[in-house]
Every structure is written in C-alpha cells, then in structure tokens.
Image (cartoon, rainbow, N blue to C red; front, top):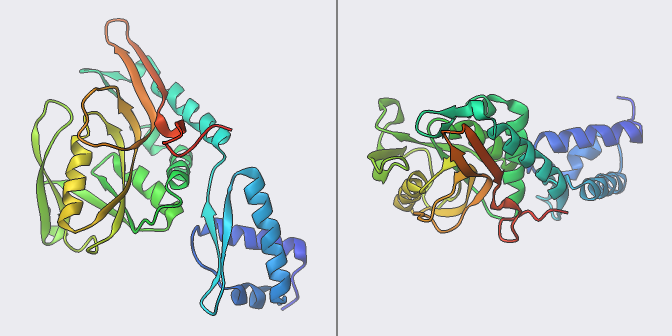
Length: 279
C-alpha cells in the first residue's frame, strides 16, 4: 500500500477520532495504517489536539503503556453552546406550541437529528469529567436525547418504562409521582439492563417537580448504582423539587394561555455550578 501523505493522514485520523468519541485507539494501529513511525503519529496527534482545544471542540487524551493509545473527549465552546440554547429557546417560545393545560409541543424538536446531536454534545461536555457507565432515561420523549448524549460518552442507554413488558424479562419496579397532578405511577427497569454499582447519567426532556427523575433515582438505588448527574432539556419554574441538583438547557419562565404567550430562557447550564460558563 502506498504511504499516506501527511495532509491525508491528518484528515483521516481526525475523521476516525471524531467519529468514535472516547474509543481508545492504539498508536500502533495508526502507525500500521499509515505506514508511519510512532513519533510522526504523535506529532500529528499534537496538531489535532491543538486545533480541537483552540476551537473548543474537545481534546485528545493519550494513555501511555502497552494497553495505551489515544481517544477523543468531546467538548463544545461555551459561546457555541449558548447559540444552540438560544436557538432552542426561540423555538420553544413559539406560541403555536401551546397545548391545552399549558403543555408545550416538543416532538418536532426531539425528531431533529442535528439539534439532538448538538444537545447531546452539550450534555456530554458538561459531564465529560464524570465517570459514566450508562445513560438512563424514561420512555418515551427522553429516549432520543439519551441516545444523542450516550453517543458522545460512548456508553449504553437504559430505559425505564411505565408498567411491565414481557420482553424486558425480570424487572425492578418502584412507585413514582407524576409531575402533573401528583398521580402515582409505577416505573420499571429490566434487571438485565444495568450492572450493579454502575455510575449513571440521567437525561430527560422535561422536568417540573422532579417526580419522574426521583423515580429513576429510586430505581438506581435498587441496583446499588450511583447518579453521576442529571440533565434535562427543559424545566419549568417551581419552588418545590424532589431532586437537589440538575443541569437544564432551557427554562419555561412564563406561560400565558389567555395571551397565548410563552417565554423560555436559558437554563442553569451556563451558571458557574451548571458546567458551562459563557466565553
């Protein structure tokens, strides 16, 4: 095979690293593919890492030793994240989204693969320094958000469900309080879906009082699992929460059904404790 030119090598290495976040690739694999010395590969990786860091696109992590290699840790510049969140808030503030009872229509946003990818990248950046073994959500609207986040974290998704499905096998079930109306519901998780002692990131589309998230936390305790963090796309303003700490991308500040007006503002993701600070 003809030896790769350095320009082509840089492009191909970048493609591989960004296409498989957090996958550890041995330097020998790159050296063999491009028929280049490890020293040359290391120099190339330094160039890629410098560009990623300068543009706020994440960074490369190099692990030494026989089992070592390099992997891409996703990131996002806070100013770019702010543009995404402002765009999200603008879409959510459209009065045509108002549904009876003050609910908002969001299914179209959760079906937008570009927006989902950006949201997943933001969540992955916020929790990049956490040890995460799995991303957890509850059916059904949180599922696309969970998968978008899990892609960048390179971990599996586990889905809590309302009620029992025979295809899930044996399940663990807890009672939880719905955020709307205080209705008691059962939330179940397959015993095969999550290893004991896992560190789990909870992702959901909307949080009001936090009843659904609290239910997922109670489920995780049955698996002796630890909550690595909580991320929600949208939260409503309320004084009472059943959870203590979370990261939100957007917040419903006001809903006026009579005037058909919605005001949605950025959530706490840009607060110092939220994880991303505007640059």
